[in-house]
Length: 247
Image: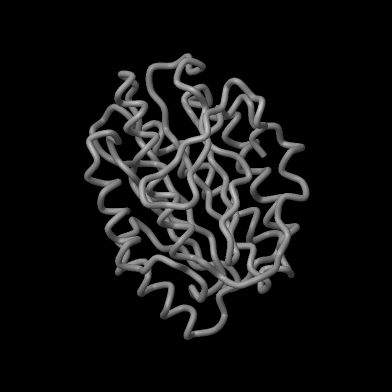
């Protein structure tokens, strides 16, 4: 969690939102361009059976990104949600992400505010992208939303999610945005249809689906996410997003 007395971190409000985000202060950035990545992870009660494996996957994502040739140009924000949104940490330079800090971060309970979490993530990307652009940094972004079920607790609507993702794509602050909805442990066909509809209706770039959430599958997910982050970072400066990777 971001420390309140950490002078490298700012706490930022978002317009028309009760939950903001934290981010590395502009004056503490040393590169000229950044890929800002966000992972949004479902911790509703139904994820209890694979929460520990998901924690391990997140740690592997961070570890793999540290070996990327673009590691100095990456920032990561991690958000968990059930019926309440909670920021594990805001946009943080990868060099300041300690692997040990990702142990014990996911505790499953409650319902699923999928729309609220996605809307906040997109809004934070837009806002921080604008702050970076205002300080003459180049930036692009990548967003992963990981869930095992349908929304049943949000205050915002799917239409608002679509509006915010569209705004992020069209924002002059971000060169490009890749947004990936990931369904994990999806075995119920009604959930399959629901998530595919949300992917299309909200305008995500890509939908990835896994019918289980065991150690091997989530390790594959970690590779997919870290490789996608690296690819989007390598695309920075080309004027467009990275090519979608096959899971």
